[in-house]
Image (cartoon, rainbow, N blue to C red):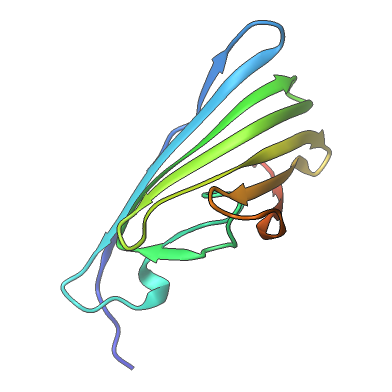
Length: 139
């Protein structure tokens, strides 16, 4: 079995912007690329889609050598509980522009931060909606 040599890099930022009346705007820009002189396997490409990248799409629905995406939320609440509308957008080298929108809820639990998001692809119908459940823990 022959293996390829490649370079993969990513950059992520989380920017909370406090607003009035318990609201805050959350901006999370991301960029990633992979390059190689050898042909790349599908699993070596950058995965985009799902709870952590582009909500409203299935996990890793898109794969590309280059991708930019950003998650946006208008949060209301506190660190222990918040509600938010969401809008995610991505520019994927292979497929172009993709976006998803919806709403979510976050609850702090003893095992970590629990997030439940309901989202649709930008040009999707209601039956294309996805539910994304995430648990985040810090060590």
